[in-house]
Length: 267
Image (cartoon, rainbow, N blue to C red; front, side, top):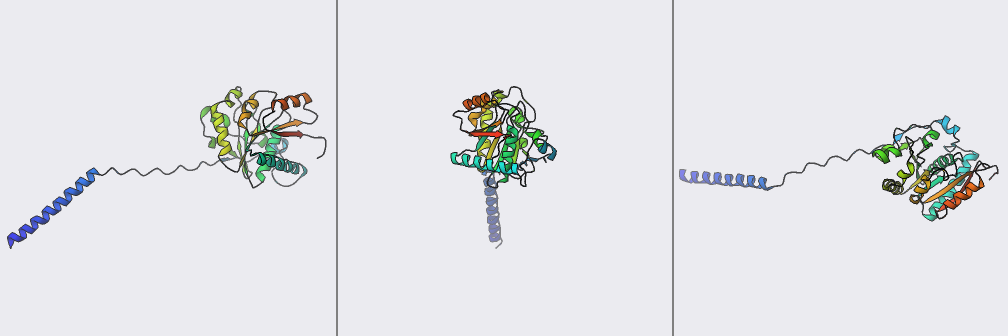
């Protein structure tokens, strides 16, 4: 009996030893456990900067809310622009003028705001006048970084965007003026950015406040990256020869039309 118990005990020990050895061998051949993937980065929030009512009034930025004759004019302009852009499948629009002082930036900002008040789309307003940036001044905001920092110093575009206190409107300002801007606008990096701004959101309209056509070559260098263009001329100020020169330069550029600023004629 003792011999039988000893034999059974030895059999149990041999079986346990075999199972332990098999477990060790299996663990040695298993691939190491992969580290858990890092959590996704927190989404970057667009910086919110309140606009200055004093600067808005000084620069005749009238489209914010409420009613008024000037606001109704921009609503009419918005409707015409949207209809033309939708019929032609356009997503981006450049606004330029013959010379400085014709009111292109005022028109660009008011049009962008009017578009943003329409709940059917969001709007990105981009200051492309790198030699004389003024969108941030008209809005009364002070951006820390802007488009120039993205192109020259690889600052992420998400950090360059500014959210004024208007729903559905985002601004891409310029923080520092640049002298050699036309060369920068013709780079592959700028072309890639223009494509990204156009396609990132399906409901977005991009408005570019461009330099005047007849003062520098920046606008002509950038127009191939834009779907359409509007020309702002100032009634009683813009010489007819300047207007004709601009019309010739914009021929074949999907020219949507001319806006007569400070018109002395109603309607």
